[in-house]
Length: 265
Image (cartoon, rainbow, N blue to C red; front, side):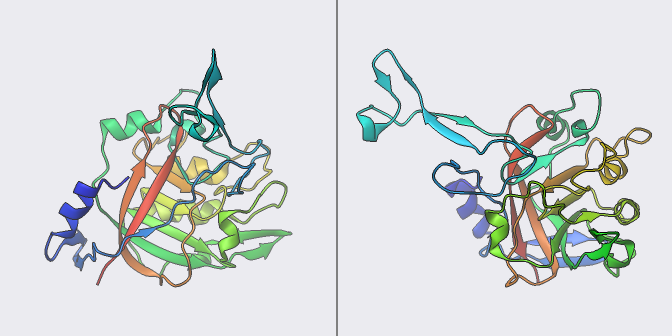
């Protein structure tokens, strides 16, 4: 997350730029766009969820005369949090999501830290019906032979209901593996999407687009990430941005994250 010092320091930079290929993009660091969906206590307020898991719970620690809640007479707020990083809120995952080895997104980002700002393309797609499913096909690819390191996919329809929707048993749209393979071949390393998965909800465990994107098993892409459950309002147009991808330091294949976009010109 942004600390006040870091944010103010970056805002003071004049004519900040990011380079991608032969493009030099000027970044507006004064207008951050937070595209994360927060995890909330489901007994108080709904947030996006999927994969048939119970909603997140926030519970004050209690014991031996202590209560971790000031409003109940405790000295501090001291709360246990119960949630699933894949099923609740915006999260970033690595290839450990589908490998036998317990690869960790935290360990990978410590081995190969992300640049503070990554060149990013926002691209809106409208899935088409194929055999009763809604699918993002190869024909939906951006009209560019080479793509930036990061790609944000926004799907239509796009309402703020995505921030609180329960996706269980809804057969959400997903990416055709040929589309995903072409993203890899055009240079995408960090894929962000406003759906609970890039694969079909029920596919018998095939996870074809995950396998293609992470190169599993033949050509593993340890530095690749997929970020799911984002939300980008329509007011922000398609085009080039700079991405700051902030991932919580949890030693798992997936971790809550906070992607921030900055407009470019």
